[in-house]
Amino acid sequence: MVATDGRPAPKQESATFDLSAYLKQRKAQMDAALDSSVPLAYPDKIYEAMRYSLLAGGKRLRPILCLASCELTGGTVEMALPTACALEMIHTMSLIHDDLPAMDNDDYRRGKLTNHKVYGEDIAILAGDGLLAYAFEYIAAHTKDVPASQVLQVIAQLGRAVGASGLVGGQVVDLESEGKSIDEATLTYIHTHKTGALLECCVVCGAILGGAAETEQERLSRYAKNIGLAFQIIDDILDITATQEELGKTAGKDLKAQKATYPRLWGLEASKTQAQKLVEQAKAELEPFGDQAIPLLTIADFFVKRTY
Ligand code: GRG
Image 1 (tube, protein in one colour):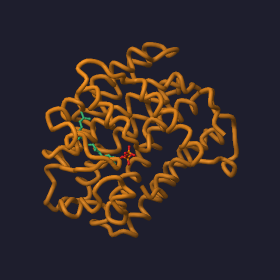
Image 2 (cartoon, protein in one colour):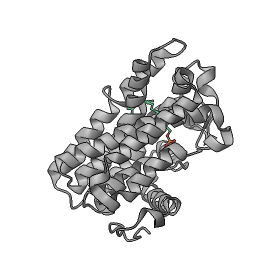
Image 3 (cartoon, protein in one colour):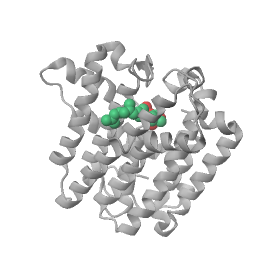
C-alpha cells in the first residue's frame, strides 16, 4: 500500500499492488493540494473561475505520474508536490482553452459545464492564462529540498512542453487539420505534441526532482512517450465507444468535427492492438528498476484498460 505520510511506498509485488486504491489515494492527495494551492483572493471572479475548473474533478493522472516517477528515482512526494500541482494547473488551463468556441467548442468537461459557459469567454481565457502563469510561480516559490539547478531544469522542461514545440504546436496542427484528410505522420505529430508532450514532461520532471541519472531520465522519457501515444489512441477510441456520462464531456465529437483519429485511420481493433503494443514497449523500459517500478507499470496497463 501507499505510505500516507509521503514517504516512498515500500517495495511490493505486482500481484498484491492495488492500483485502484493507489490511484484513489493519490487523487485525494492531489485534490487537497490543489485546493490549497489557489486560495480565493481579489479579484474574486478570476480566482473563482480558476478554481472552478481546477477542482472540477479529473483523474489527476499527470500529477500522479510525476509523484510516482520522483519516488521511483529516489525522491519524496513532498519534493514533487508543487510541480505535480503545476502540471495539473497547466493541464486544466489547456482544457479550458480547448473547450472555447474558437477551438473545440464544448459545453461539458469533467461532468460539469465548461468554464466559458459559466464565466463567459473573456474570463475563461483569463482563467487559463492565470493558471498557466501561476503554475510556473508555484514551482519556483514552493519547491523545497531540491537543488535550484534541478528546479530550473523542471521549469525549462515545462516551458518547452507547453509552448509551440509542445501542446500549443500540437493544437495548431490539430486545428489546421480539421475536415482535411491527413496522413499518419501528421496525426502522430498532433497527438505526440497535444497530449504526449505534457505526459512525458510529468514523468521526466518527477525524475529530475528525484535526482535521476541521465540514463534513467532517458529511459523514463521513452516510457512516457509510449504511454502518452497509447493514452491518446484510447482517448480516440473512447470518443466513439463511451457515453457522455462516462466521459464527462460530449461523446462522438471527433466524428462530427471530421477529425482524423487512429480508429478512423486503422479501425477500432487495430487501434487497440497498437495501444497495447506501445504499453508493452513502455513497460520494457522499466525493467532495470525492478519492483520499485510497479506503480508506473500498472499505470501503463491502466492507460489501455481505462473506460473513462
Ligand atoms: C498549454 C499554453 C497552452 C495552451 C493550450 C488548447 C491547447 C493549447 C492544447 C490542447 C491540449 C489538449 C486539450 C489535449 C487533449 C489532452 C487529453 C487527452 C485530455 C484528457 O485528459 P484526461 O482524460 O482528463 O486525463 P482528466 O479530466 O481526467 O484530467
